[in-house]
Image (cartoon, rainbow, N blue to C red; front, side, top):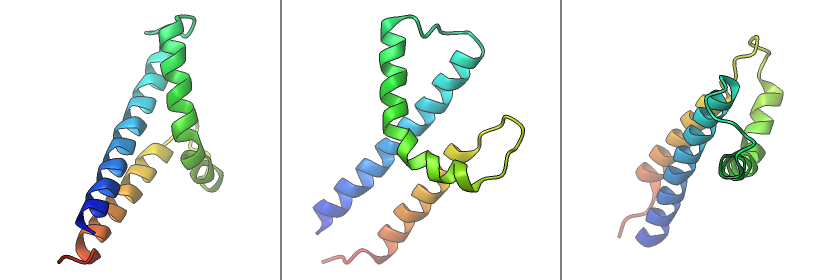
Length: 94
């Protein structure tokens, strides 16, 4: 049971880092620091979009428009931290 808990905790932790990387890359593209015509940047951006967008889309639908500011990654990260803390507290320990 502890191995399953550690696996889920690690996957959630990695997903938080993917959310952060996706947000940073979107800022870098928006400010023209990196160019999406570069194949490596495009591949990384496409991967991050495909991995994070299914979880962010429902949050974006519920959130009001904040004038171009997207805080859905922050909300999702807070939810993931809450789930991780909840699991740590209530997961059966042997």
